[in-house]
Amino acid sequence: MRRKYASLNLGYRKVPYQQQKRHVMISTQTALLRNDQDGLRHAAELLGSGGLVAFPTETVYGLGADARNDGAVAGIYAAKGRPSFNPLIVHLPDLAAVQQYCIVTDAAQMLARAFWPGALTLVLPLRKDAGISKLVTAGLDTLAVRVPDHPVASALLAAFGGPIAAPSANPSGRISPTTAAHVHDGLAGKIDGIVDGGDCKVGLESTIVDCTQKPALLRAGGVPLEAIEAALGRQILQPSDPATPKSPGQLLSHYAPQGRVRLNALKANGHEKWLGFGSVDADLNLSASGDLTEAAANLFKMLHQLDQMGATHIAVSPIPETGLGKAINDRLKRAAAPRN
Ligand code: TXA
Ligand code: MG
Image (cartoon, rainbow, N blue to C red; front, side):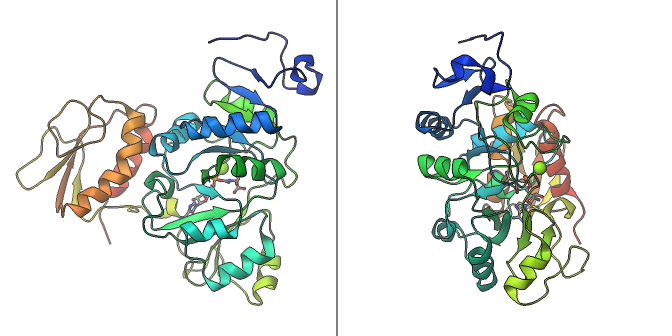
């Protein structure tokens, strides 16, 4: 269904039918949703059916998807045009919800009590069987979580009732959006909805602290380092410290399966398991129909399955270097890189 509103601009307060309608279609498929009960219910329904919905947080607008749904999470990468799979932050309503998915370490408890809801993301050990898509964690066994401090984000989390994975709602390589209009400029036509919540008051991404071991700063952001150290009563590791865990993008062979990986394989040799793409007779197939979004959704799951199958050598079909194929190939190249 295509509805056109020629006069619509996102100086939305001037748009008269904004007051009359539950939501307004701003392109073929992107709905501008009001942050009232109807708009949020609609946003929650979109998320529940695997859709992508941008929503405001106090830091920046996030591009949300159901964190349990591989296909929906793959959609985030497709919409942003991200050339690589970086793990995503999962947004939850409170510490109790975080405990369902992660092991909350002592330091994390202190930081959560001091700063949540707020502009602090904690990296924590992921619970087994938490049900989070492996595409959210990029195959890692840790999860980045945050309880946002924004009434619209909280209301959306309550209406949806599940974990929302959300990177900043901008095309890859562009600056993070702090208004619904920024999101619209970058992603209209590529996502299902935008919940309008006005300007973001922090305007800068969350601070990320890894609490899986000794607390370590991974990214500076909305909560100052001094405040974090004051809450913990001690200094924490800095990104430059050799003991600080490397951020996922810096780890060339994260996540690598145990078997040796051979790329661009047109067939598997006798000792290899074949991870196929397209209409090939492989042991596992990323997408028999050659759909890159499906392949992205299956990638980390299948790399883990190959480990479970005890694969010592893995042959991988060529993946086209277009759209999501770039991110898939980036990850496969890391998996195939020499190990140290
Ligand atoms: O303020 C924010 O944090 C915003 C709003 C929407 O919440 N989100 C955001 O997400 O900035 P994004 O995807 O742009 O940044 C996520 C960062 C990446 O640098 C990623 O590497 C890191 O979080 N990250 C995610 N999971 C991680 C993990 N398990 N271990 C280490 N770093 C992780
Ligand atoms: Mg970002």
